Image 1 (cartoon, rainbow, N blue to C red):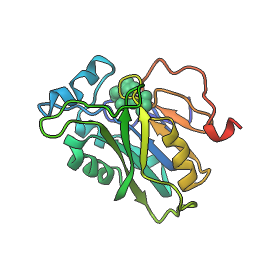
Image 2: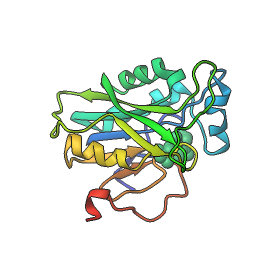
Image 3: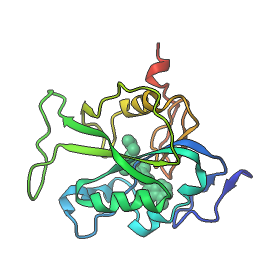
Image 4: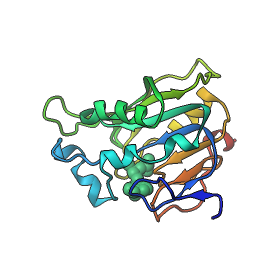
Length: 202
Ligand SMILES: C[S@@+](CC[C@H](N)C(=O)[O-])C[C@H]1O[C@@H](n2cnc3c(N)ncnc32)[C@H](O)[C@@H]1O
C-alpha cells in the first residue's frame, strides 16, 4: 500500500495509485439531483453516487502522464458537466469517442424513458492531455450492444480504446470489473476474477 496516495482523493476513501497512465477510462457515479430522476435516479440503489464537485476534485490529473487520453462516460442531461469534468481533471475536450446504441436481448433497440425523445443511447467523450497520437484510424464511434446489469458499459469499449490508442499504461476509474492489462480504481467490492481482454482471447 506504500505506493498509494490518499491525500487528494476528494470524498473517496479509496487511495489513488502513485503511478502515471497514458489512458484513463472513467465511468463516474453521477448524482442527478433534480435532473431527470428517472434517468439516473435508480443509480443510487445500485451503488454510491458522488457530488459533481467531489468527482471534479479527484486527483485524476496526478495520475495522467504528460500525454494522456481520457475516455469519459457522460449522460445526456449532464453533458455540460461532462465537459467541465474533463477540464477540471486537466484535459482538453476533443470529441465524441463512442456512442452506444442500446439493444434488448431480442436485438430490438431499447425504448427508454425521456422528457423529450426516448432514451436508447449513451456516450463516451474523449479528452486529451498533451498531444497523444492515435495508432489506428479504423475505429468507429458507434457501438450496438445489449444492455446488461445497471450502468454496465459494453466490454468492447476497452478493446476499441486499445485499438485506437495502442497498448499503453492504462487505468479504469470507477471500475466494477477487473480486466487483464488494466489497472483499476473504485470502491466496488464485487470485483472478481480478472477477465482477459478480447484481443488476448485468441
Ligand atoms: C457507473 S458505475 C461504473 C460502472 C462500470 N463502468 C461498469 O461498466 O460496470 C460507478 C462506480 O463508481 C463507484 N463509486 C461510487 N462512489 C465512489 C467513490 N466515492 N469512490 C470510488 N468509487 C465510487 C460505484 O460503486 C460504482 O461501482
